[in-house]
Picture 1 (spheres, helix red, strand yellow):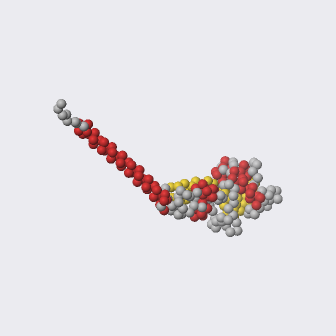
Picture 2 (spheres, helix red, strand yellow):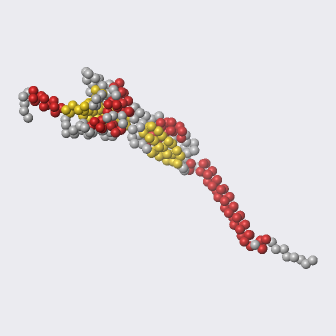
Length: 262
């Protein structure tokens, strides 16, 4: 029987051998890539590369960033994966000025602290400056501003702590549309009512109101103020039934009684 030459598949189909080679190379590259990635991950975790090198704070308006970072308890140099983010959130939330906070990792080495502060409803005039009244009713007596603030009303003559607390509670219920119109609130008690207030509005109108039900009394101010002549002198009473008391009429009446002519 004559010898027969054996022909392999690779010889009959040359393209198969090349495809197998490419497939093997791709697998090798994939395995090597995974291997090096694992090495890099191990190196990252075991080296100073994973230490906290930056602490960024976003959202603060009045709170000092350094003070907030110190309050969080997170320090530079600690491993970013060992940093107690939940504990940092609890610590920052304990600050009177902070409404909410989130603390997250931003790889490779940054911790990001995002905060929302309580709005400032007003400022109380103190001997040493102006202390903020926050949206939650807290008064920051140790956080005194020397310059006259312009972002919220000024409260004057509030030496009576009980009346101050009552007004603060009312301010938390007052809409921003009305609150932003108030420049100053002066506590001016009378024999008739110990809760008497005198307000100076940004539109030039002087208002008389009461601490009790202050938010309710002032809620209709925008519509009532539109009916007041901007050139008229007098006081707008915002109490049970709003009305405008003109001082011009009083002056005219006094002149008539004295026999004076214009």
